[in-house]
Image (cartoon, rainbow, N blue to C red):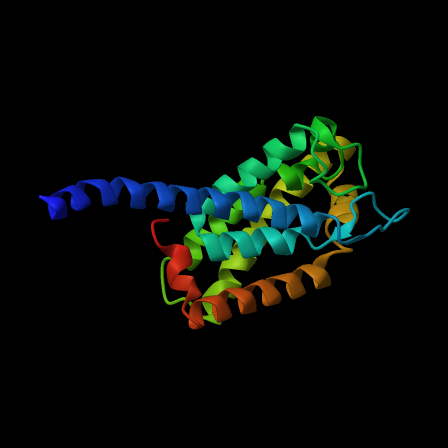
Length: 199
């Protein structure tokens, strides 16, 4: 009878611990991206879009947590920012207004960028090449969103590309490579298996 009681009690407890772990991962990932947003180099007067480590953070979150949790973490990040928490880049008004500024298009697609990176990476051999391809595809989506919003603001594709693309190409390639290396190492040493469990 004691063994039966243990069997009936343990599963709910385990589910509770697992739920708490998943929540902690999502919250921690959102805070990690917030930290990355504050590591930046202003590029004014060339462009109002700063060079930050933020995109790297989004790629790492997607590659390590997988598509669903990566999406959830970035949705939470946007909610935190819209609520007025200092999670966005300090160059900007903060809060909801930040989403209507020059970086708004990049911010709004973050959940989909993390989802895309995780979705591609979790469906195959998790080596460096797949991680890099996942990051590259996610970055394409990121710049489609970012440049699309800049086009709305400037009414010029050339101006949008000047403000939101040309200054960042080399840095973004480096971010993809570093994020792919982190994800590959994470998986290689066994932690990746835990990260993708129950995604």
